[in-house]
Image (cartoon, rainbow, N blue to C red; front, side, top):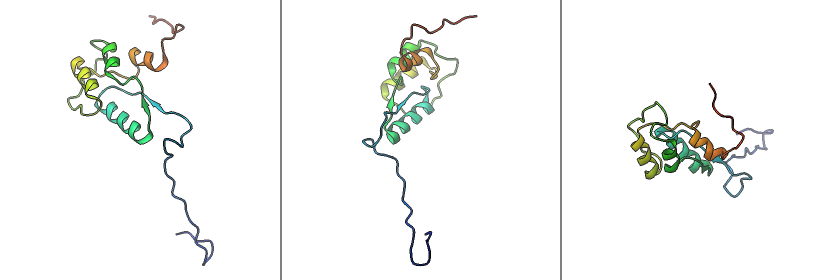
Length: 117
């Protein structure tokens, strides 16, 4: 233990994460919809009390039949059953940059530019 002279020990406070009631701001989290992304989301929600955004079955379904060219890995144990089922049905990863995810996170903006050539 560090000391301030021979007879006066210095106490070092132990820092802990703030409790949910001590936090000033709500943490929101959105990530990739695949096995790793769902495990990370569960950790962030459990550890920091984050609200998960756009990480549900309706987002997967809105992404459409082929949300990416990346096939879903076989190990999909995290996330709610409805999300896992929706992902397995499509067989593809839904990345956090997908329009279906961004619409839920950012809202439907009327000023978003159209995709160009």
